Image 1 (tube, rainbow, N blue to C red):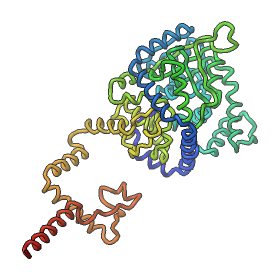
Image 2 (cartoon, one colour):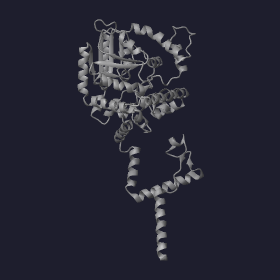
Image 3 (cartoon, rainbow, N blue to C red):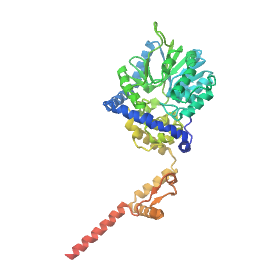
Image 4 (cartoon, rainbow, N blue to C red):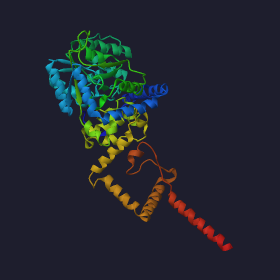
Length: 484
């Protein structure tokens, strides 16, 4: 995975000042949020489907071992092979070994976030095997030597002008006077370059949106058709997927598919929804001679019995990312993680450790939009809050946050002291604010006041005003009593 120890504040500050990035991020609202809202409104049973999908995933997680074993049995019956990888290193070794057995010199790849998670491309290159990303977004960022900035739209951070420039620099074998100003021309350009790659690849590697235990099938959803070419043309097809992708039946997969495209891109269904079951059989006109599935754990089994189990319901639609105000402001690369946004803020600490990426669960406003749009009802704010608690408990006792909270707790346990300190503080801040009643700069709060004014507190607290009112009422009662 991409290192997650980079300074998030510095990354975010650079992203906010990147005018091209800010222009590209405008597509999040128009390209994802609006379309999802329209797709949801057009499906009256959407909320019922969400509940059903969450129940399906919860059932699978409660019996994951049984469904994975059944899936393995069905794959074997169909003529395929299943390989189990405990971590990223084992997964890389298995895939590279299978490619070497096939005598592969080049590999075509469909979009797979798990392959990004385990840094598969680098391992293939080290083994002398050329990996070629065939998804348009992944192909673009491979040319740029970048990582995806989004789990559905990897090149979301780029503008059309940037992509045109990259294509002209990389595709030197094509006529230099070709028109690349419009999206159809850019797509045709990529297809021209990739066509020979598809035909010459020795191995095709895809991810899987779902693994169906009933039939031993893997399912991919795409809009470009590159996934089909990747798994049909080479002699060997390798599926790489994390263990929580299992679902019991074809009907269950259908329920989840109805939610996936609507939540991700606002489509009723993607252009291609492809089910693959084993290698080519006698009489099949096409398909691979060998079919392998690599099931990757990489920390998932540890989540099953812990507080982050709900995260394993995720179907990688990206809806939480699309609706996150933090992501919309800074993009995916600022997170310095394969998985950005709210879902990444929960999943990445489990994969690499909270101490390496404590900034991720803290990069949230807790507005709750991520949970409200999640098609499988994952309580993302709750899970991010729990990671914050884990990170806080791990901090040394002498850390500034803990010392500050201890001081506040001591004062809160002594009401007279608390009221005294609060009174002094509010009066002082009110005096410093002056007539304007707002701060443009305040020590210890400069991160806030650099971008916005901070309203001054009232000179007296509500409790002080209430007590004053009660005293005045008591005096008035006594004066009234003396008259009679």
